Amino acid sequence: MGRPPPPPRPAGPPPAPPPRASGARQFWRRLRTQRAALVAAGVVALLVLLALAAPLLTAIEGQDPTTYHPSLIDSARGGVPVGSFGGVSGDHWLGVEPQTGRDLFARLVYGARVSLGVALGATVVQVLVGVVVGVAAALGNRWIDQLLSRITDIFVAMPLMIMSLALLAIVPSSFPRPLLVALVIGLIAWGNTAKIVRAQTLTLKGLDYVSAARLSGWNTWRIARRELLPGLAAPVITYAALLVPMNISAEAALSFLGVGVKPPTPSWGQMLTAANVWYQAAPQYLLLPAGALLVTVLALTVLGDGVRTALDPRAASRLRVGTGRKREAKADADSKKARAEVDSKKAVMDVDSKKATADASAKKEAKA
Image (cartoon, rainbow, N blue to C red; front, side, top):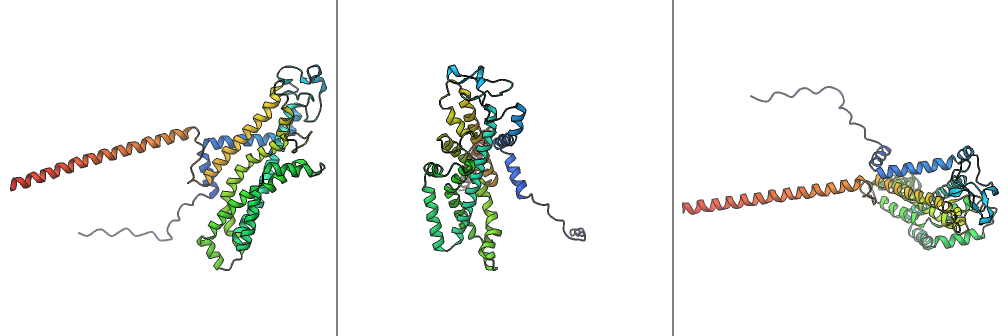
């Protein structure tokens, strides 16, 4: 008997495949698997919230970052705050500054606005200039590529601190200092971004869909806007996330050297400059801005690494935190166990093969 005929197919179009997750959903799904990156994102969000809510928080405390309180300073001891822990009280949550009596909590949260704002502004300038120069060098002819590449090499070789010191020293003091610091850092340190963008653009330019767009008659600007910039988004966002902590450190260093943000505008680097002679008499005056800088830079670095790994899942994370080591050790143990099982099976098969060969030889000898 033959097989029964297959059941008739239902009329109508075939069922549509399930929709694929969008790029943003895939990125969020990969990022959620990294606990360290999520904790770092929470820390960064808390710092940004504190910076944005600085006027509200200082209003609740009843203080501001510029008012002097000479009654809270012991002039007989050289300006040390009166009271324990640097003058901590219900009116001054973290105490007051030595020699001035300004509220330390108010200056710390307002300093977060300046430090984070300067770092983000400098990062935006670096990314904009780097993307424009890198894409122009990769899509231009030979002479444009050589010219822009040599200019980029010059900016990469420039020492950031020395050039920033020179530029910040000659600009009039009437210019807004935080904006000036952000522009100086961004306009000097864009070279590495341009190099990364140029290399990535050269890679994307040789792909089939870019060649097809060129053959269809699209101009260079349309190809860059429609085909290349979406492909550059992942590496640019990843590098920008790592640039923010570097720029925070650069702003703190410039303010510490006295050419960054000027008093009375609070900044973490400027606070460290004023605290370098008070670390014994009032250690919290030094430890609070230094701890804020450490936590911010560490959180942004871990978050940048998490963003890099989520955007490029083939790249292994440089940070092995928490259960990552356990998973890695378990994977190694499972691979060793699998190799041991394979070796044991091979050994059994070898023994069986030798035994079968010996039996066949014995039967041949018996027949002979």
